[in-house]
Every structure is written in C-alpha cells, then in structure tokens.
Image (cartoon, rainbow, N blue to C red; front, side, top):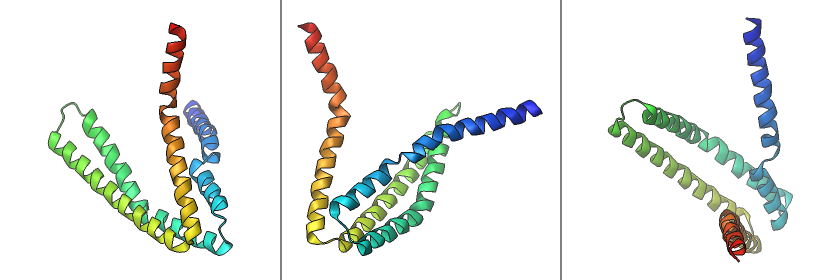
Length: 156
C-alpha cells in the first residue's frame, strides 16, 4: 500500500514538474502583452479588452469542454473493435457544430475589440496580424526549405 501511495505521489510530482514550465511560458499571454504594447493602449482600453477577453473565455468554456468530451468520445469510437460509422459521423458532426459556434463567438469578440480601438490602432493591429501570418507561414515551412538547401549543397 505504501508503494502505491509513493508511486502516485511521485507521478503527481513528475506531472507537476513537467507542466510548470509549460504554464510559465504562455505564448498566448505573451502575444497579448506584446500587442497591447504595440497598440499603445490606454489603461481604460486595456481594461475593456481584458473584460471582453474574460467574458469570451467564460462564455465559451462550456463549448470548449463539450468539444473536449466529444473528441474523447470520438477517440473511443475509433478505438472500438468494431467501427460504427454512423456514430463516428454523428460525433464528427457534433464536434464540427461546436467548432462553428466557437468561431462565431470569436468573431463576435473581435467585433467588440474593434469598437474599443481607434482607427490608427486598428491599422496597426492589421499590420501586425499580416506580419504575424507571414512569420508563422515562414516558420511552418522554413524547415522544408532548409532541408532542400542542405540536399542541394550536399549534391554539389
């Protein structure tokens, strides 16, 4: 019995040790802070955006939780010895419907955010989003170009 308790305790400590650095490095939070600095928001604007963001998080929590449950159920259906295509299709549709709800709520949140920003801040935000998309796309495909360059160099 003592061994079981010790193993459970060690597992909990290990999981905590592994997840703590991930929790400390939060790209979403860093990006949010970076954007607020770029836009030079007033304290009132920062508070309004924080309120909008928190409302979005609490409003979408049930949807996100339902999506997680549905994804788990879908994994279980795929892992079953005999596949029930009707149930799988129903779960996929359910998850897709939830995803659509989440996207709609996100668009509503973005519309609210735009009402808080000035025209100059909106222009700066669009420029930042455009640059971020290019950086993401470049990082995403950069390794492919590197491997091609290395292959060409080794062939020469």
